[in-house]
Length: 576
Image (cartoon, rainbow, N blue to C red; front, side, top):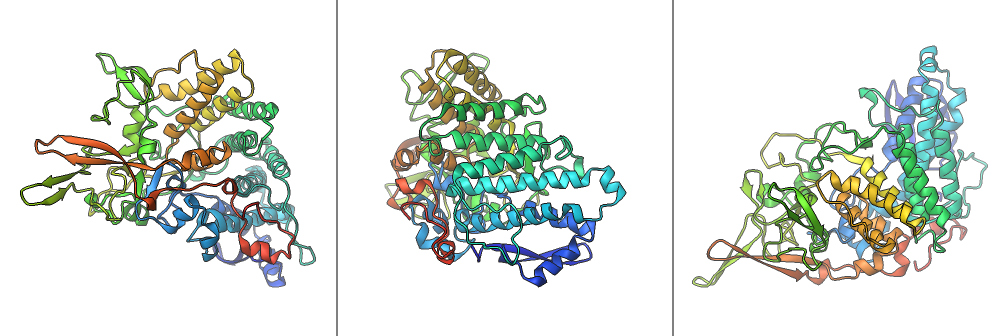
C-alpha cells in the first residue's frame, strides 16, 4: 500500500497546488504543511473541497478521453480499438494496468485516486475540531456541512473501490508515522458497514443540507447521500455479492430507494433527449458542475463523426444495444399504444426499416444512417458502381478506417447537436452522479427481487412505468412473472441509462457479464441502392471488436504493485 497516490498540499494565499505521492505519506514536512493549512479556515475549506476532485466524474475517462465502460460492455465498441478498453473487454488487465492511470483508469487510477481522496477525508475529519472557525462560519453551519461532505465522499470512494475489487483495506483515520500501513483486506460486508455508518453521519440534520444556492450547486446533499445508500445496498443485494439471495438485503435496498422517493423532492424531467445537457433539473440529485464545453479532446477526438469535423468518432454503439429498444405501434395521433421487443411475434419490426417506430429513447441516444443531424442526413452507407468497379461512401463511414464508426452508429447522447467543426457554439454535457430515474429503477428492481408476490410485482411495475411514461412508452403488462419483470427491468436500465456508466457494472453485479459479453458483437451493413433506397443487413464485427469475459473477471485485480509491496499481506482476487 505504500505507493498509492496521495495529494500533498502546498498553499500560497488561497491557491492550492497538488502533486501525486504516497497517499499515506507521513513525513514531518507533509505534516507541517497540513498543520499550517488547518490554522486558516479558508485554506481548510479549500483542502476539503479538493476531495471532490477524487470522485469519478467523467464518462470518457480511459486513456485521457478515448474510452468508456460502455465500450467494454455490450453497449458500444471502441472504433479505434483503444488499448484501455480492450484490457477490460478482453481480460488483459495484467498486460496493461501497470502503465499508469492514463492507460486503464478503471483499475490502477481508481485505486490510487480513491485512497488519495479517502486520505483527504480522514485528515479533514481528524482536524475539524482544531480549526479556528469564524462566528459567521459557525452560524452558517460550515463545519457541519464539511463534516457531512467528508463522510459522504469517503463513503462514495469506498463504494467505487468495492464495486470493482470486492473487499479492500479500510483506513478510517489518518495514519501516523508509527502506524503499520500494510494491513489485510476487509471483507465486502465490513466495507459496506463502514459506508452505511458514514452515510448515517452524513444525513444527520446538522450535516448535509437539503439544498444549496447556485454558487454551491453540485455539492453533496442529504438526497445525494440517500441515493448513494440506495445504490450501495442494491449492489450488496445483487447476485455477485449476495450468492445465497438473502431477501432481507433486497428489502433493505428497496427501503433505501423508497426513502429517496418519499422525500417528494425529485421528479423526472419532462424531456429525455436533453437529460445530460441541463444546468439544473428536477431529476438531478447530484451532478458534476462544468461550464459549457467547447469542442475539445472529448468531443472532437472521441464522439464526433469525421463528417461533422471530428477527428475520431470512436464511440460506436453496437447492434446488440440498438436491438434492445422496443418496437412500438401508434394510433392515428402518433401516441404509442403498444410495444414489444423486436424479436417478439407481432411486434411490427421491419428489418429493412429498422429505425422506424422504436422506443423514443432510441432517437435520443443513437445516430444512425440517414437521420437528420446538424442540417444534413448522416451518411453511413456504401454504394457499388459496377460500371467503374468502385465504391462511394457516405460522409460518416469508410470501411476499415478507425476514425469512422465500426458499427455504423454514433452516440447521440454524448454529442450535443451544436458541436460541429469550425463552429463556436458551446453546450453543457454533464456527468450525472445521481438522477431520479436511476432511483426509480433501483427501487423497482429491489422490490421485485425482495419477494415473488403480487404486491411486489405491482409496486415494481408502477415505478418502471413511471420511467417509461416520460417518453410515452406504454405500461408493462400486468401478467408479467417475477422473472419476466426482472428481464424487463434489465432492458429498461439498458435503455434509460444508456452510456451513463451503468451497464458494465450492472452486468457484473448481476453475474450476467459472461453470458452477455461472450455473444457475438454486431454492427449493421448499409448499402445504398441505385434508386436511393437503403438495404440493411446485420453483420458480426471483425474479431478485433469481439469481447471476452471469464468468471475471474467479475472482480478486478488489485494493482500488482500493491500486492508486491505489502509483503504478502494484501491478497489478490482469485484468478489473477
